[in-house]
Length: 126
Image (cartoon, rainbow, N blue to C red; front, side, top):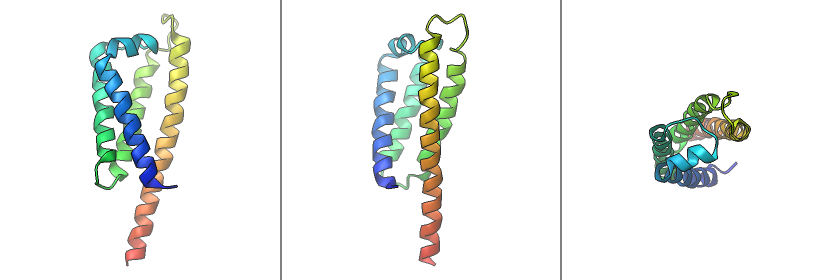
């Protein structure tokens, strides 16, 4: 797996999602069937922008991949509140939860791969 390509793609994706959440938090919340206030959606968007910026920066990507994993876990915890029977859009929230769960798996695999590559590079240097 090419971590440079993954780093750039995830960085751009994070920034795009983050800008959307910061610019239109009510719309994002309503469209996705979330039961979250605008400040929470904006804060999650700001976190995405920070993660994306870190991934697009020239520093090593490892910690930034793990920041995405942590953010995904936060997203899943927030989405859990939107899955109740009292949410008329719970089916949409359930679909979003499934997508985020899939992204969490991908982010975790990439973060683990960055650790493996880091260790391999360290062993090769000795």
